[in-house]
Amino acid sequence: MIQNLGEDKSIYLQISEMIEDEILRDILREEEQVPSTTELSKFYKINPATAAKGINLLVDKGIIYKKRGIGMFVCEGAKSKIQETRKTSFYENYVKKIISEAKLIGIDKAELKKMIDDTKEL
Image (cartoon, rainbow, N blue to C red):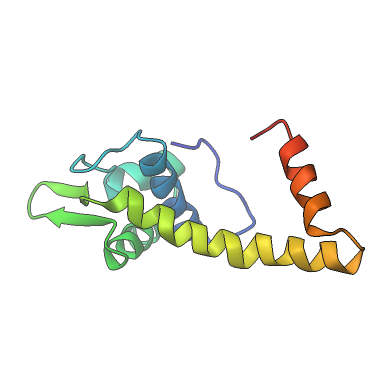
């Protein structure tokens, strides 16, 4: 788990994204138990209702489910579901803006592709 929560977005969203990130990194796998609301609230020193709101967001998305009397678990297919959602979001929030800015400043498709290909991080 991330040690510190940021100030840039709601805590419950950060909790939800942190769990999604752990699923994407295979720290949490399908059918594995996720940290409880109590564990999250104690670890981050937050209100249990805030932790529950983050957990419930993932339940609503079909990423985790409740085993009555046991806890919350990662759904089968959760990783691919998160990847698809994030790919769409990535395209809408980043790729479209990059293309728009590239056009504005005169960078053509070939030059933009070269910039991406030359980037060492990928």
